[in-house]
Length: 290
Image (tube, rainbow, N blue to C red; front, side):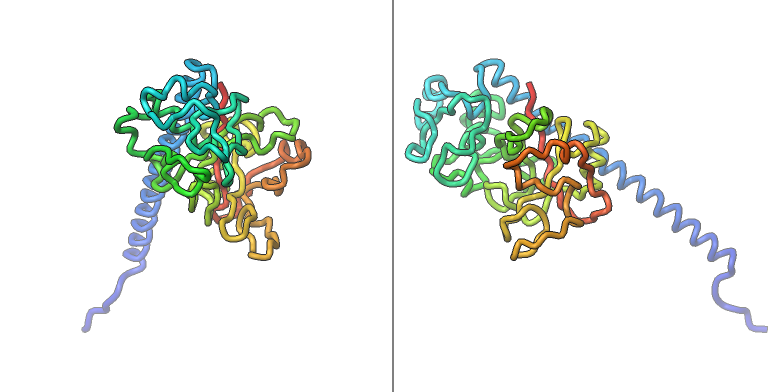
């Protein structure tokens, strides 16, 4: 009598059980890896903030905003002149001393003091010696439009190609105190300016990071979430070239990240992450508080 080939029901059940166990183990490993990366990323953000706070404690101003940087650092870098950075003086090393990272000091768009902040930190020996420097910061290139090169920004050591952009508070017309003040916007920018083809995280990923290390709210605390600024259509998030909006693809339920001219404090407070959106729509912002 010929023996039947194939698997018995018991053997198939055992195989399915083994596959299930393997998948569970893989998911646990993936979660552990994600958590480790989140922890390293948050530690990196907090570490850079500490350097900014230390600079301010020593010199009385934010790096980049320091109005006497030329006097203090010119002996280290001769091109760091004792003049305020502006559109007619691309080599000026001084900020305007208003306790923010002013976006309007250069002719090209934008964030003159924000770019300069990394130079000030380097000259103060807080992100690497001025002679060699930190491998993740290439050194400031004096020009009227510092956004034309990524070398003027600091690159994340956790997420390759992701840059830290210091900028002033976009929400300066709002009455919600937790969204005031200078901040880092962090993302895979396609140029030194803050445009990108996608965000760094999905809403669920950023929400998980926010819950673990901050308050879990996208518009309060020290960690915020917002739509990335699209390099293809000059709108925030995944939107068509004609500007039509699909808010299902947004990072949060606050749909006016790029309409900051009016007071929308109540909408900010009520905002939540759109965790059902699988796209990488979110650009994290880390608030600088001393």
